[in-house]
Length: 318
Image (tube, rainbow, N blue to C red):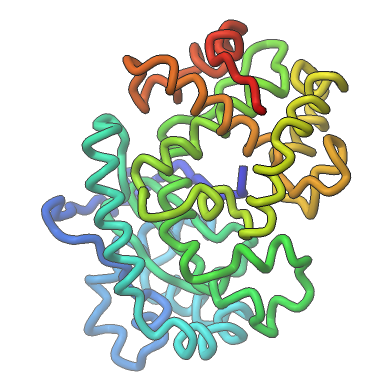
């Protein structure tokens, strides 16, 4: 799973409750621009949900709006990235439209899922690109300036390739699904359970973001997707024969699920997160054999922790 930051909000305790217009279209309010503008005082009300949520991020509910704005503007990250964020991401209309469509699909297919009432684009000093506090989502725009952005030179390629503007909506929706349906492991979890869970996440993303290829949703390049498709049988054989599927070692699960340059523990040339790819394939095979299963059903622990799921999927790559 990509790292996102989910914080339990203290907004109610700090007197920062707010109402949202649920009928309004999805907007990514540019906190990064408004907060550093000389006329910020005139727009403070528009920033109020963000300012309240940032009390939680900063770990001090006594901070007033002026203090929060000062902390933000004086941040080294803000000073370093704000000019380039403004230049390279002057507007986010495409991402807003994509989020609007995805929110509608979520409401239809996952009616109990809670989506943010406010979304803000900002510059973040944290490694997490998406931060959720209560009903407020922050998108760290400095994480999406393109894989060739000079400021990313210190990152390995497998990380840089995910720092594209077209990843904003994917990462935001993925974070929403993760927080609404967190992984629930058993007392003695095996790697296969996490693979199925991650495969279910990708399947749900495919359902609510059909305009994206599965490769996009997995974070794979065209070459990585093609290689995985061509070697699917070999990947599965290696996992089955080398004890990967039923390994209780959490490090094994991490090596096949977490972002990495490769999944050499399975096959030397396998791209990173190959457990997620195979998990997706198993889930799709299961869904093809069980038309009565809903998208919400596959996010249930009873599905991904069940020993019968793999058997019932009848997964057998050619």
